[in-house]
Image (cartoon, rainbow, N blue to C red; front, side, top):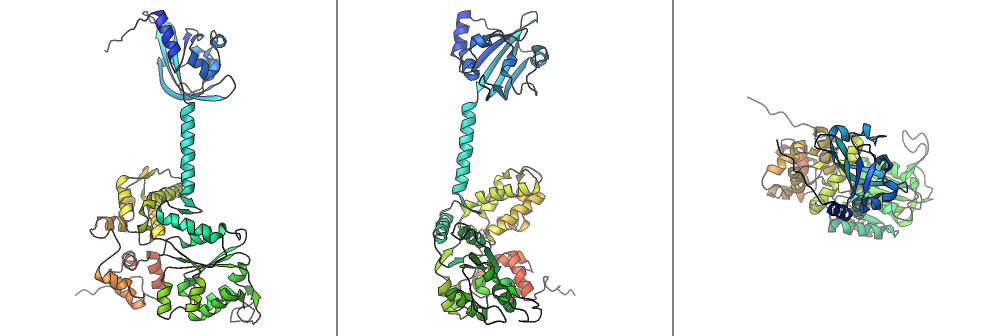
Length: 472
């Protein structure tokens, strides 16, 4: 057993020592009455020595000592049973009535016969530390505001350029063309422009032009009158009229047919529409934002998109960078998606492991931010600890991370050949066959998300599974 060391100090020296300590120190007798009170405890509590000495320590109303609040007397105090208290963070009540955050320690003092002589307590003021913590939290909050605009998150140079473009676009009425790969957040950018513009109190209407056939898209945009076609049993206003006074966002504008292009050109130029089945012209007041994941310039050169419409739409173009060109934003996005999933699922996942983050940073993200969000949601299904680990990530991300030469988008001769050709049913089947019908891999070679590949397969009636090979 370790022998206890005893110190005998000159009374004058011990008094000077107590007075010079930055921590508050006070002592109690065997009845729990305060017998000494140094200058630091006066400063922390607001009570002078004259006001405190002779009174019970309940004067300070500590919120937490031994897993409970301060008892009414020393006879009920846990110090008698435990003999000591080390570094308990709690609050004491200041003379002026407010709580002071402190760290409290205490020692029970006995004489050589084991009789209780009293208690020595020390109190460290945490007010400055708490203030520093609040300032750090506020700084982090402000930093988060700097790194986001609406629901767009990032601190990279590429994203800051997008933020600047959004601010400029929001202050004008110009038609905006958003260009970027699938999953980069073009709809978020469109929403941010609208909600920072003078039209923010008016409707923001979104239409995905690739989701509807030519006739349905015409009716959706322009509306129709009763009897205009089979099934038109009543008049219906279109999305242009719904957006009156606000903004209409036309996504996948490169997918619209030449017929709809002609009708859209008139709306953009004249701000007039005609419902399907009538000849009456109706004025509309709206702002156009359009988006595409294709190169409209190339479509103009091949005759698939009207040149006059192209220049009407490309008044103020904004290019949304792919995630692989803004990798420094990945940790911010991961943190954001984890917080969102924690709120949604009730889990308390703290973050990702270092090895997982390395994989997330190196993966090329052909599906961009949308693919990253889906990966985190997938990991939440599997993760049972506080941190997302490698094997919580989707298998295609893990596999690609461990292959050599695939940290960047495919650069093989075949991949380059595919990237320079317009996607067709035959080309998609060729790629799917080459990938053994793996839609995620086909999407990576095409620079599309797995969902986009699935939509094209559905659009072109391509079977979801490839032909079963014959066995001899």
